[in-house]
Length: 173
Picture 1 (cartoon, rainbow, N blue to C red):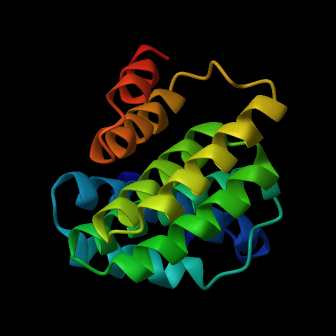
Picture 2: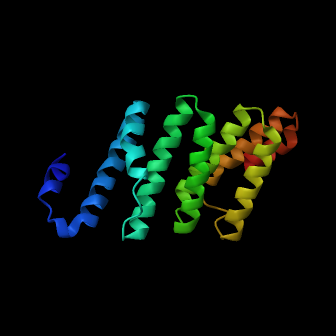
Picture 3: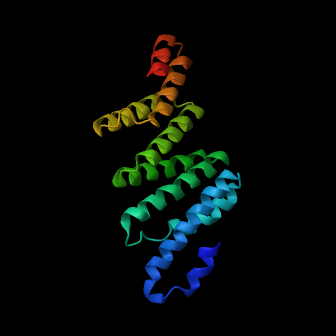
């Protein structure tokens, strides 16, 4: 709130910085609203910011955008709008790849795999998870800790198909 009250006094010559600061503030508001389970409010904060072009500080802007998209996808998911959540997760993955933000990539992939499982698209979930794990292997990130969620999703799939041996192996991995 303190930073937000200072933005109007920022010189107009720094308008890009003003926009960047307001985007960062809105990102925090989105994440806070999501944690408070106020998903409509999270979307109210996020959607206008996502209409802005990226700021001149591209890496910071991509990080903010990925965080905003994460909040939006969570909100849509928990509001039951799975198609919107999936689309936003796909966009998050695209931007996260561009910016090498592996954590957001993993979270979005996990959410997509969960959406596929929830909607009965088990083979699509399997294909998607394997493609994601292969991408991370190619990046030398096969041991990256958030990938554990994807191995758990694989285990769930194999368990669903009564392939208990493979399910157990996925848990071990």
